[in-house]
Image 1 (cartoon, one colour):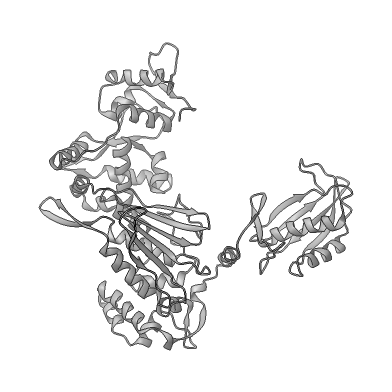
Image 2 (cartoon, rainbow, N blue to C red):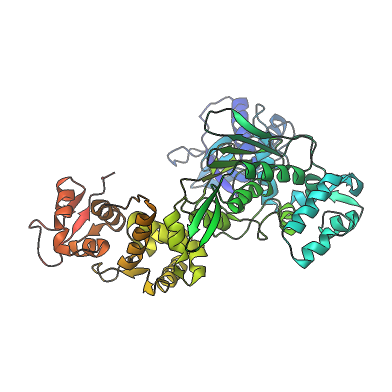
Length: 543
């Protein structure tokens, strides 16, 4: 993608000051993936004011000011009888610094960036897999401890192929894991996994509570990534309490943070990170919260709004595949849907995965008190696979929290296109508890608007009965809260709609909507406040 910017040069300005300004702008364009072009002689308001700069002189001076790192193409054009200058900056092979700073284009501004981030973005643009590249490290440098850990990972996950691979010789094991080149050298992924680097790849710390003294620390330089992962897994498991939950006639052992979710979070933090940074991937284990922070931002089109369902992307495909082949990570390499499923199915909120300043990616797994009735309730759902489906779990959690859902709200929740979201809701509608449907549509929404779904009375009663049996206190949204969330999302609500949402007659909920209108949250659709088709509108300025 080529970026285009306009530059205004004041009449009578010192030519050398003009060159410094243009060199800075041209370097900014060159540092931006795809390069860009500057148009000189246009005012900020778009007025053509022109320029008399000489193209050859300008090209030479920009080359000199940028320490002979940037060769631009400059030529004059005439637009509406006004002479302008076009400066084309090719995409830089190495970052072009101006005043010891690297800047690149973000929207219409030049923003400073560090060298590691610049190189990472360039590698991403070139679709270059650093982890697959050949290193200078021979196969004989692989640590015996790392090879032993690799065999342990394979054996622990079972399967005839994994068992057979675990028994292979050292050289065969490394070659079959595709970490050895034809010249007998390890790939970069092989060096990380079986040799390590001088600085730690992982830094794990455990505290019983925020601000408390550390009770465990894993930060080991000069060890392989596999050894570090193994020790972090063991230490994390030792500080992840196990609780016993009665589900029907079966007693299940449940961790504060599901072991699979915790493990996937750590593996993602090393598999997809930017290895050009010397910083370790940090794992903070505080009470019932695990927070993993890894260098490098989101990659390959993945972002917070699509990370559950986006096709697997990694800046280190060879390393990601290696960890998958060793059964350390999910084969597709992302594992986010697994984290979501494991957290939600025991009543926790889904993982929070965000890009933060740095850039870094931070994954937070927050373990609240176990929701034993929820776990037992999910076990009653037929067919059983519905209670393990990520989309169904997220929909059920939202239905319980808000009292309703429609396809528009569900799109961002389960991160699927509208058509697939509609299909996911309808699939859930075919599931049942004790022979009765779990969800149903409501009456009242105007024709042509998306259907609205709620939990059936039978499904909700089954959960509340389990609450009473265990003494669990569950917060359900009040009728007013349901009305407000519904009206805010859909722009309107009627007594028929609210009645259907909460399982009451429309005539019994009219006072709730009147009170909200009195508070300025809603506004009546007509001055009389009654009549066929009467409803309330959401007041846009309401928080």
